[in-house]
Image (cartoon, rainbow, N blue to C red):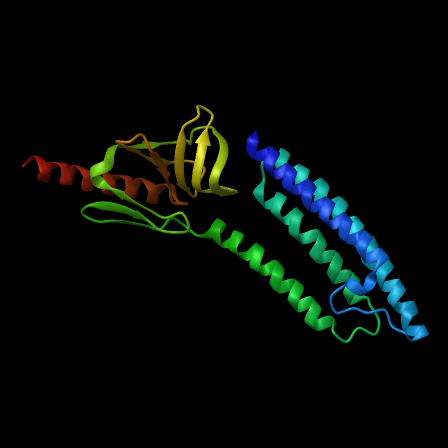
Length: 244
């Protein structure tokens, strides 16, 4: 619930910021980067048409951003929410600048907009489609990636195979998109857990001595099961060596 409130506040802030930009553009077009109202009478007509189009497209984009953002929050869809924040303004700018007559800087502007969009969007897609990175050695389990962790075998209380995740209440410092869940989360029963999950079923549940719990899964369930048996055997072997 708290996460939804934060996302809604961010959405309203962005929509309000875009609306303020629209007002500023209307009152003082010369503040637009790379644009200046021409002194030439004929070109000035085209400039006014361009400003009207830019404002029109930005207003439509703002409505789409608001509706798409709310839909993303209600459907708990990160991809819909973040695309609603980014894509409408990008498309609005693209259409406005592509239809402006006498604009010799159009290619540079569009390339810049595409580059800015790529910086935000493609890392999200990368996180979504990469699989689990994990390595098991004699004393620890190493999980790679943006939220990577080293889990000492000596700190592990138990390892189990389960078919579902606990009910998540909020992402405290995590990322979710489709079946990918990475980072720190809090469950409905107020327990902090870490997820390195890339599927909707079959997870390895690792419970530490200090109460911390990890859920790990590959995209493929068979790979997750193989990892579980390998992990369990390595822990048993280590415990056997210690007892000897």
